Length: 220
Length: 220
DNA sequence: TAGATTGTTAATCGATTAACAATC
DNA sequence: TAGATTGTTAATCGATTAACAATC
Image (tube, each protein chain N blue to C red):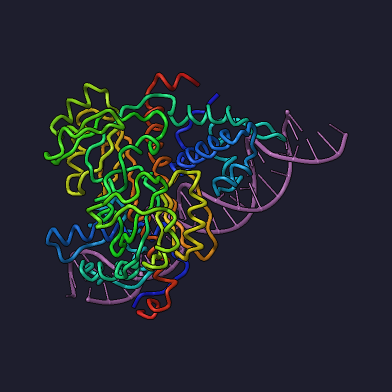
């Protein structure tokens, strides 16, 4: 049913996940069918792109009618790997945002946090009740990856240590890395990598604001 | 000195912030000059794009020689609005990641957290020692934005409340919104908006992994 | 001057849009 | 059948790349 293509862009994959979130909300609202234009209203993405993205993977809709939401959710979930359990390991407590209890809402379906490691020895042993885990030493990295069958590493250490920790995770056998630090890291071809540059993306705001404030314009 | 252009893409602005981070690290390493190819090595971005991005704003380099790092940092900082103080307000404790003490590292230079608001009444009054602030009620939103001259709102509430909180922030007078929730929000033309879709970006990993694991391929 | 690297141009590549044939 | 919306094509738009003239 699912077309297997290698030429699907990263933009398409990210948008598929955005559709998934929107569809889940529509389902919760009691909807059962939807149009590409409705997904567009929920996501701010044009219906043309939505139909094109979906059709990269198969024919999920009915002409003249639209899409069944539950059907679409099931298939997008399948495409994005949401129906598999992916054990993840969090390394570092330098993640910018808030409250570890929210990791769960924030990670995609199927992602399971198997361990949280930190480089600061003072923190070892601290309980994280929301996850039923306690903070472990970075020294356990290789053992934890092996024992808990971790396939994805979330890197949230200080920028200086990002590449070193990434290398250790890869050597220990993870298949994918999400890098939240300000540094860009590199991995071998065979390893999946996502760099999340929240800071640079937020800089868009100060750029826009600085340009709209007349006082600053005059600095030219 | 700085060209004032309206046609610079968001991608260019995000990359400018990435260059800034890389240059700061190079400066800390004791470098004083750099080539576009060296910035490329630190960021994984091609030297062609780097020179093109920079030249959208002016001529910052010297032919045959390269760029002065301190000079470049100063100008990129000016372009991105890093040399101004931007008061920000954090609404919601649903941010996915960790440890509020790290907001500072994570936000771009110039961003100052003036207040943290939450919708959960049980949390009111809790101290955030790293920020020297205590958690306030959402009811104070308008008053805080006015009193502390807040120009940027960081929205980190539950998805269902994202649009409502955004509307209140805009009505209260902020000029920019960073939306960290899974929902896409809309704002008037005149308001700057950045949507940070960490979850969808991370889905790239499970997509890649699902495709590389033979067992799943056979589900077709 | 000879060597090197920027800033910029033209060519390529990819992504988005608009339009419509297919079909429920 | 008539009306509607998908899936897909062709046209447009924008971003990246490669190459090189300008120049330190």
